[in-house]
Every structure is written in C-alpha cells, then in structure tokens.
Image 1 (tube, rainbow, N blue to C red):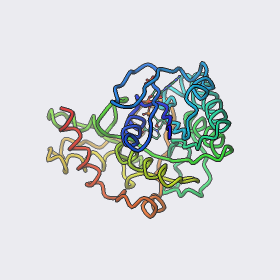
Image 2 (cartoon, helix red, strand yellow):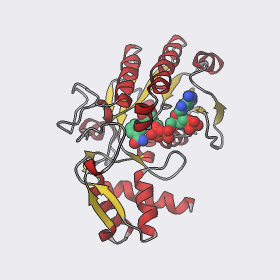
Image 3 (tube, rainbow, N blue to C red):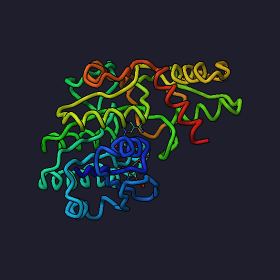
Length: 290
Ligand SMILES: NC(=O)c1ccc[n+]([C@@H]2O[C@H](COP(=O)([O-])OP(=O)(O)OC[C@H]3O[C@@H](n4cnc5c(N)ncnc54)[C@H](OP(=O)(O)O)[C@@H]3O)[C@@H](O)[C@H]2O)c1
C-alpha cells in the first residue's frame, strides 16, 4: 500500500513518514528543504506547479496532506502565496487523489477557531481570526467534501527537521543559561511531533474518518516553558512572563485556541494530557540527535 505524505521536510510531516515506514510504502515530498528518510522514496515537488502529476505518477492508496505555508505571519504578509499553496494546491492534490481512489488525511490546526472560548471540540464551529486559519479552514472543507479525515494539531514542538519550534528554542536557551520570554495570556495545546506521527499511524491503520483533535494539554507558552524547565532540570526562574500584547506579531492570534482531546484519547489510547510523557520522548530524541 502506497502512502504519499506531502511536506516531509516539516516537523510533523517527517515524523508521520517515519512512523509509517515498515507498515506502508512511503513516498514523501519536500520543496526547498531536502531531508533524508532511509527506505522512503523522496521527491522534490513545488505543489503550486502540478500536483495532479504527482498523483498520476504515484497513484497513492492514502494521501496524508501536510505541506502548507505554516508560518502564520507569512500568510498575512503574502496572502496570494498562502492561498495558492494552502487552498489551490490542496484542492488540486485532494481532488486528484480522490479520483485515483486514495483515502485522504488532512493535517489542520487549532487556528481555525477564534479563541474566544477554548477547549473546542470536533463539533464546534470554526471562525478563524487570521488569514492562515482561513486558508486551513478552506482546505479542511475541500478535504471533507472528498470524504477525507481532518486531524487538527497545535503548537507543534519536537526534535528533528522543520522550522524552529518553541519547545526546542526553550530547551536551547535554558541549556545555555539564557532567559526565555514566554506569553502568559495566550493558550493552546503544545503537541509533540512524534506523538502526531504515532497518532497518524494508528488512524491510517484503523481507517479513521471524521475530524479529530490530536493535541497535548491546554496551557500557555509560559506554563509550557516552565514545564520544560522542570522536566529537563533547568533553572525555572529563567522563564520570564510577557503578555501577548508585548509581541509584535503581524497576524492576530486567537487568545485561547486550545482543543479538547477527549475523543482522541479514547480512540488512540495515547496519554495526550500527560505533558511529562511527551517531554520524556522529546528529551530522549534530543539526546539522540546531539
Ligand atoms: N507549527 C505548528 O505549530 C502547527 C500547528 C498546527 C498545524 N500545523 C500544520 O503543520 C503543517 C506543517 O507546518 P509547519 O508549521 O511545520 O511549517 P513548515 O515548517 O513551514 O512546513 C511547511 C511544509 O510545507 C512544504 N511546502 C511549503 N510550500 C510548499 C510548496 N509550494 N510546494 C511543496 N511543499 C511546500 C514545506 O517544504 P520545504 O520546507 O521543503 O519547502 C514543508 O515541508 C502545516 O499543514 C501546518 O498548517 C502546524
């Protein structure tokens, strides 16, 4: 069975591909950042060019669509590019995957919600407050229209390839004895990339359909940085509180976009609310890569 994973050069895409190896034949795409995944077939593709050709060439049984412009501020600054990648390319890819009979899994985000309430369930109605969130919501609807599953994750952190992530930055700074400024009044649910990979493997094995929130426990970035300091044995006092208003973000952030992970815990049997479980994997993986 061929699983095509787009965006294996991103933090979640890489871990998803790695977790699927040995169970499935994995084809992974990257664009600007080449990665190595032994025994996966890797292909360089700019998804704004010809996503249909990719599907024609590989005829996947499963499409896991991860690639997107994931930088929230970049989407606000370059809305045309963001729309072309996150919506138009997703539509081409998903529609063509459906035509060859592929099962579709779309990786989405807590930023489809406005953050006025928090702990959103899979049945709550999205209302994005920034352009990134809007494009992810549009792609969700496309995936849904083609019978695809929607897996929402949030605040991804972990070791491995991909853009800098908050969890790794915190560890690097604390290890060097540097201060970490962390926001106290924005909440979501930090989620380890490896756990996302494990969840996808289980969901694909079980042929999951529907929408699912695969996230860690609700916390602010400040609480998350403190938890990291405690678990790794660094000086907690180096974590300094700041307010969301102190940060000059280009795009508006939802105040509390935390997601309820109750359904995912029941379904997957992964202790998603246990931050120390996730941090133990994170720590081990950092040790293995340094
Ligand atoms: N970061 C988070 O906390 C978070 C939270 C919720 C959901 N997500 C979702 O996770 C996924 C990865 O996001 P990320 O934040 O990890 O961002 P990222 O590091 O910027 O990764 C984006 C991925 O998309 C690929 N990509 C971008 N433009 C492309 C194009 N034109 N053609 C082909 N591939 C292209 C990139 O490939 P190259 O790097 O090789 O160019 C990379 O693999 C996205 O679907 C995002 O919405 C992220």
